[in-house]
Length: 333
Image (cartoon, rainbow, N blue to C red; front, side, top):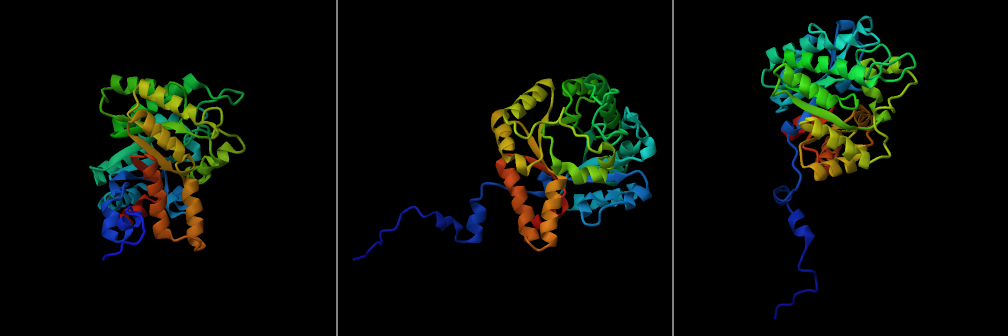
């Protein structure tokens, strides 16, 4: 007579026994098409050479290098890039007027990408910090207070400038109150009805951004000042939902949560609450932290890159801006 041992009938390990079974039943999928590579574009060769060799994904590219880079990214299956300009100090000003120069660096970068890789989607950051002499995302008064309405007036001109140049998606990252509605109206007034707004809706005031600010050239200008009067308090969760609701009401198409890994709970709440496209930004500090561990051989680079990105996807993000996008796409081939 057959004797059945008193083991449970439900064995969770059955579906983990073989790689093909694990793949067949996996719940979270990551593809190169869900990855967005941030790129820093330098105004000249001297600025491009002033990059941190320890963080290669933060290096500054000339326009010539940009054309080659985007071709390589497209060949890996990446379908979108985010452009961040590194501006000469002589072109920075208190009001950041270079942000809406139709012949400026960002319009030049857009044209370079469109000529090199026409099908690649271009996301342009809409904020004044690369262009201001003080490193803040907005225009300030004599007491260094951020002027909300004055800043919005500049941001609308910036967004229209980039849309005129051919940007597919504009991404306001400034966190001014009411800027999404103003930008949507300005885009529509200029017949950019199909330009997508990706809003940094839940952007926390975080020190994880520091390597980005160094690469952008705004860290030294910002000095000991901070951005806590407009970026969110890292201790708040409900406030993120309020911000997202306002931006959707004003016409945003996609919501962004930043930074990613410290805010996995926020990504989950935003996706579950609104059921709209949600992106997350695995920021420069996350990239630098992982890169340091890889350099010291404390962590395995190939597995950790994918594990970190999959955790962000699992939380609810539909796409991820990441400095590991290129390497992740190579691993996913």
